[in-house]
Image (cartoon, rainbow, N blue to C red):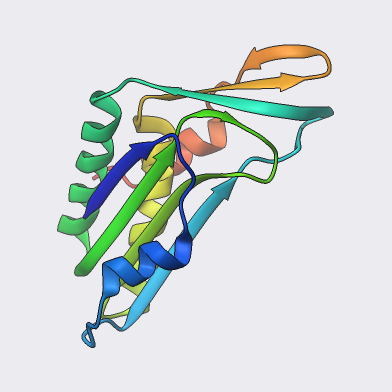
Length: 150
């Protein structure tokens, strides 16, 4: 599994092509792409700034991916998380999972996203017309992540 934390945007099709190559043993490719929304509750978002703990973010994403790889029969994967200032509509995160079967690919992708939302050291600050504020973890995200704990 490949993990990258980067400021620059990513190309979903290029990432899938690089991951799959000419392999014919892959039965399922599941992707998830997270985008910056233009709203949060009643507030219109002008931009979002993502900060991370360099080195620790990559390590934690790697640990999450290793846990997914142990839990499901995966054939590869890529997780990319961006940082820096992003505008509404821009891509934040990409999860690509390869498996022989769709169930494993879907479940592993959901697991990675649920765990990433609560366990990876990233922080979001939203800039709105009412000022800037840090986004706190949602109770629903915490519960989803806890549901995966063994």
